[in-house]
Image (cartoon, rainbow, N blue to C red; front, side, top):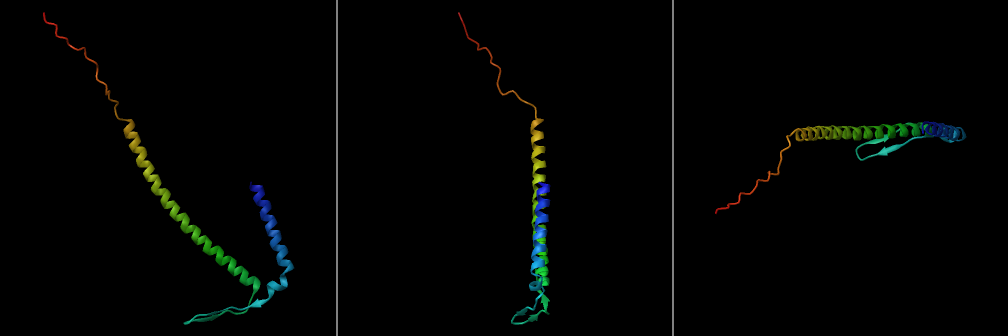
Length: 117
């Protein structure tokens, strides 16, 4: 499985490289963006398209990493709680195993018959 992942990664890198080489002029074209809000008006400087793509990629990587970290943190807390419950249940089970076994059946006693003559 490790080799399959490695081969797929190499193929992906080659495809990105080929795409970049074939579209170098388009990716080098400059663009600027304007964000017009009621209280704020922002305009970026002229950025090449590859810069915008890289900024977008790393922003998505950062956001998804933070979301993944938060999810992982919640799962760790849940695992910690479940482990403590498991330890309590194991202690309870061990204490129940160590209880002495009591006979619940009473010994049968011979019935006294009154034979009076």
